[in-house]
Length: 348
Image 1 (cartoon, rainbow, N blue to C red):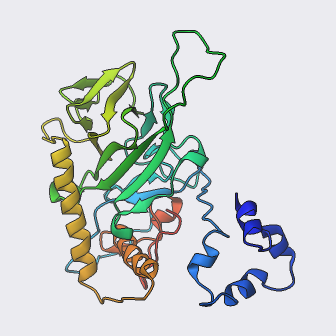
Image 2 (cartoon, rainbow, N blue to C red):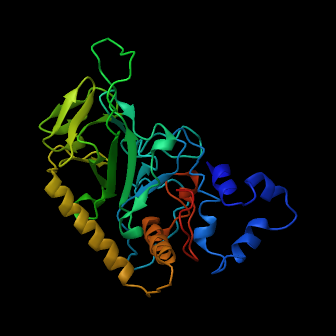
């Protein structure tokens, strides 16, 4: 796809550009009527989206903003910090939350949850050409949306039709949105709210698999650990079937759930419904708007630049633990601090 796009524009391929003795792409950009721009380079160098983990696609960090204490921290915690606030990671292809990294560079934290779609329980994001680039609410908030196209398989009662029949309907496009609640009662456990609906299609199925040691039991919309702690909470439309929890989607409906990174105590009350999801989302958006609004406001002509600096600021606040800005989250660099300047979490 990359080579085809370059050829259609009459530009050098990636291999030709690397072998050239001049900056052929740069010169072509400067020759544009309005000069070089992000829009010119965007289709030439799409983001690689790869990380050295079993889940392959980079994770998006979801957590409430960290706080700076009134008094400076007594010391910088450079080793493992058991009291650090948990942070969730949404895999950027939509395949799950807090999936295990596998490689030694990653620290596994949080309840691992995998998402599947369709009656054949296909992994969300399993085919890269069907998944969309993640988008953020208003272009910069840590409220992520990912879409994935998956056609419901044809079921013909064991008979495979040899002659082509009617034109099949377009595939279902499943839409996932996720964010970490900024409500104070959920900050310690980092509760992530997730919503599934259909951006296209009228009949879909979504499934959730929670990768925790058995036994797990599903009671009154709550998935409970052996000790009774709450590992996940689902709205009334979900059912426990064949080892996973599933919900049916219609064109005018949605399925919502909440996943705490650290399971909630059995006495905790957390109800989930589309209305609760909307309330928590509004609160999350208001928190980040207020936080970004406290600082100096810079407005560039390009909306993308404005989105970038706002999101970088959000990322810096997500990295804070005990008033200390960390280099990263969920990797070995988490133990390092950044006392002199803020730095976006590029590895996350």
